[in-house]
Length: 349
Ligand code: GLY
Image (cartoon, rainbow, N blue to C red; front, side, top):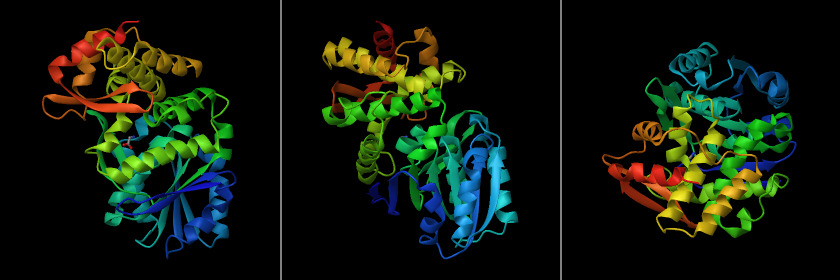
């Protein structure tokens, strides 16, 4: 078992290991004075792990209620947000009580945002059940729902009280969903350096690797909790990835889109002489080795149109994360007018 202390505006511990879900209640009992808890989950995850979460909380003396919403990104919406906060109120949770987010990124983001808003803030614990949520969305306090105008457009920075990454929960994860998380793991490899990048194979995603990814995120969150500097490195592959994801009408998963976005930015960086062609080839080969896509048939015009709506755009500038070598990425601001060249260069094989 590994623990990682996140020294954000509200400090907390991320625990990575096995057999953590049965200890959920004991962990939560150390975090809050109240003894009422709501387990929030969705229709795929709750039947798999809901009973264990409830039993553990009850054993620790909590009076437990549950809130289960339909699985899928469509639930990260205003309607489900209001359903959840109304249920928190109807269940009489107070500020000394606790909410548990049991699920993947959708559950964590929706529950975290509801926890941030209900009573102007109630403690919540993240129990991520996907690899992607373990290494990315459950850590760092970004919470949000989607708006019709775009993903994650309404949210808050609100740190959890604890994160429990129980690797036993990954056993029930479908292969394609596991691969999605691998795209983010490879991102950390490119960001952090050879030690992690070279260790990555589809067979080696274990406790040590997951903890190394979270520790890389820890450094960036501690340096820049509110996403104005170092945290932006975590967007490697995401600017073009989000555009490709949106243009596919979300038929591409987030991990597949980030994989394409990372391959595109690496190819474009090589084309513009910012990294060696071997670096781009190495990144692309690593993604392909995990069964992740590295190219798209979408037109450059369509990708551009989708990228222009990126919420990270600031005025006429977009900041790309560009790999110069494995373990050496830079924030590279470009005028929006230069984006078509980057997309065209990234699409070339
Ligand atoms: N998912 C990127 C971040 O937390 O900043």
